[in-house]
Amino acid sequence: MSAFALEPKERAWCEELRTLAADTLRPLAERGEPGRINRPLIEALGELGLLGRLFDSGSLDLCLMRESLAYACTEAETALALQGLGAHPVHAHGSPGQRARWLPEVTAGRAVAAFALSEPGAGSDAAALSLAAEPDGAAGWRLTGEKSWISNAPQADFYTVFARTTPDAGARGVTAFLVPADRAGLTGGALEMLSPHPIGTLSFDAVPVTRVDLLGEPDRGFRVAMGTLNLFRPSVGAFAVGMAQAALDATLAYTRERRAFGGLLKDLQSVAHQVAELATRTEAARLLVYAAAAAYDRGESDVPRRAAMAKLLATETAQQVVDAAVQLHGARALQRGHLLEHLYREVRAPRIYEGATEVQRTIIAKELYA
Image (cartoon, rainbow, N blue to C red):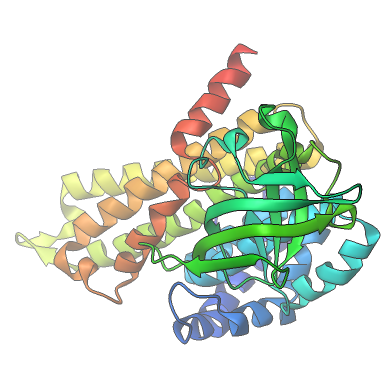
C-alpha cells in the first residue's frame, strides 16, 4: 500500500483489512458456490462493521476498503461493493420509511441489495433503457420488460430499478424505484459468467409500484444512477488496483526464486524491466484512484472526469498486470486454484461493468471539451 496521501492510521487499517480478508473472509468465500450469493460471507462483512462503513464514510474510505479486500479475497470485495451499489440510492434518495426498512438489514448483512440498470438492449448506453413504467391509476405504475447482467440477481432481497416513465425522453424520462424481490410479477434467472460473480436476469410482468416505492422524483432517476456510479467508479478502480498489486507481489516472489537459463528470473533484464513497468503503472493507477476519491469527498465539480479517468486507467492497468504475471509464471498460473488463474477470470469484468472502457473515454472527452 502506498504511503502517499495516507495517514499512518489509514495504512494500519488497510493492513488489518488484508489480514481479515485472508484469515476470516477467504475461508467463507471458498466454501461458497461460484456465481451465487454467499450469504455467510455477507453476514461476516456485516458483523465486522464493514457494510456499515459503506454509508458512514466517503469515497476514499470506500476505495481503501475495496483495494484491501481485493488484495486478499476478491469475493469479499465484490460482496461488499454490490451491497453498496444496490443500497446507496436508498441511502441517498430513499424516504425515511425505505431507509428504516432496508438499510439496517443491509448493513447487518441480513438483506442483499442489487442495482438494476442494464438491459439486453441498453448496457453501456444507460439512457436508452426501455423497461416501461406504465401509469396504473393516480398512485402508481406497472413495470414491464427485462433487465440483464444484474449483480446479485435473481437472489437479492430488493432491487434499485431504473425504468422509463416518459417515452422518447432519453435520460430525462427515467425513474428509480425500490422493488422488493417478492413483488408480484418479478422473476429472474442466473447467468453463468467468466468471473465467479452472482449475476442474472430479471423479468418484470406488470410489476406494481407506487409513489411509496420511488427513489427520488419521477423522471429524475438518471441522476440517481449517475450519482451512484460517480461514487463507485473510482472504487472500481480501487478493486482493480488491489488485484494488480496481488498479481505484482506474486510475480516479485516468484521471479526472486525461479531459476531459468542459468540464473534467477529477476536477474534477466527483460524480466526486471517488465516488472518495474508493471509496478510503476500500478502505483500510477492507485494515485489516480485516490485523487478521484478525494475530489468526490471534497465535492469538486470535475468528479465525473476524475472518476472516469480513475476507472479507465486502473482497470486497463490491472488487466495488463495480471496478464503479464500469468506470462511470467508460465503454465502453472493457468491451473485451477492458482491465484493468477483466479485473478485472470476476475480482472476482465471491471473493464465492462459500471461503464465500459469506451464509455469512460467518451465521458472524459465530453468533460474536456465542455
